[in-house]
Length: 231
Image (cartoon, rainbow, N blue to C red):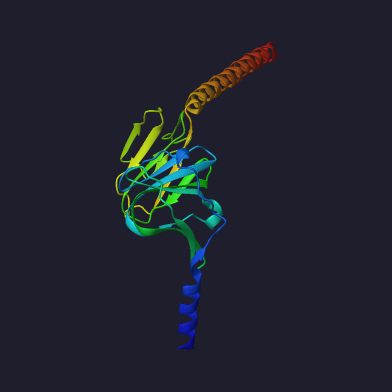
């Protein structure tokens, strides 16, 4: 009985810890409003801006990934009318994994946004229903088996007003528990073609050199053999 009490006490102590290190961000730095029932990831190579839809919640939980709070910064919240809403940030540690909460004074409906560090390989775990959009940086794309693809395959790929590629998954959860996008500069595909052509030409030249060298040696050997056989 005592062990159950200790476990419950630890769970209570691990929930709702205020995290003063996280300072609110500037809503003008984000592309708000977002889209209802949709999580949008705006990629730029070194970081990702996330805009999530919230419907009638007093607390909204975020999984910041393996780095926990360190991978969560500049949070903002804005309701459907475009009004910035005040909130508190708290953290929850559950079985050794950190989660971040947006805590509101009253039920909130609108959009929350925050920034995370990221790299050229975008990976996110999918844990809830709803659509997902990944907006690639300008002049970047995906889809090449040699340079990078998106997994699972998006339900739709389009372009926005800025010319950015937008990958769309319609309710990928629970069939897919993870989304991965390897993206690259659009010019990389052209360089890949040129490099392939270069390798082809180089291989052709090497083959030609080997062929004609072998042929010349063969003729030289035949002449030598004829001269040797003469009485």
